[in-house]
Image 1: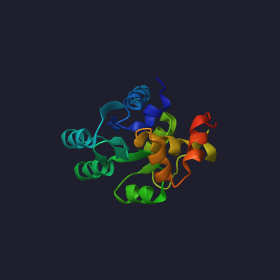
Image 2 (image 1 turned 90 degrees about the horizontal axis):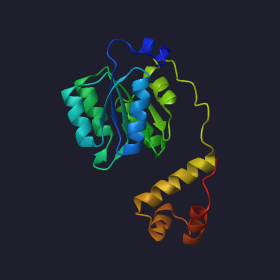
Image 3 (image 1 turned 30 degrees about the vertical axis):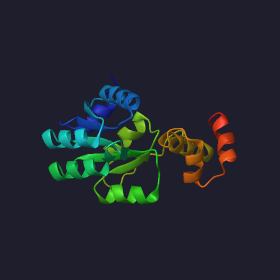
Image 4 (image 1 turned 120 degrees about the vertical axis):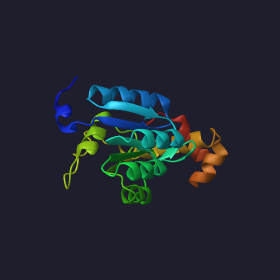
Length: 184
C-alpha cells in the first residue's frame, strides 16, 4: 500500500462511492482501498442517500447520472448530514452547467469520466485555493466526442436513428463514426 496518500487523509478515512456502472465501481473501490480509504459503495441514488444518512463519510465520489435519478440528490443528503464531507462529482457528460450546479450544491470538485484513481484522490485532498494538478493524460477532443456519442448510443438502447436524432446528426454520418475504432 502506498503510504504517501495516507498521511493526507486524516483520522476519518471513510469514503462513499456512488455509481451505477458496476465494473467501474468495483475497480475504483479497490484502487481507493489501496490508497488508504475505508470504502463503502452504493449503486443508486436511494442507496447513496441511505448510506449518507446512516454513516455520513468524510469523503464521497458521486456519479452525476444514476439509473434512479440525479447524483446531486446524494450530494445534498451528504451536505445535510455532514457539511465538511469532501465530495467529487463524476460524470460522462462534461457540461459547464452541471459543473456549476454540482459546485453550488456543495461538491468540492467535478471530474469527467473516465477519471483515474489518482485524479480523484488529488481532487478529494485538495485544500483551499490549491487546485489539483491537471491530469497527466487528458483525453483528446476526438476521444471526448467519441465517448459522448457512445454514451448517447447506449442510452438510446443502441438505436442508430434515435441516437442520430438526439445528437442532431445525419444517421449515415453516425453509422460511419460507430463503425470506426475509438480515437486515442
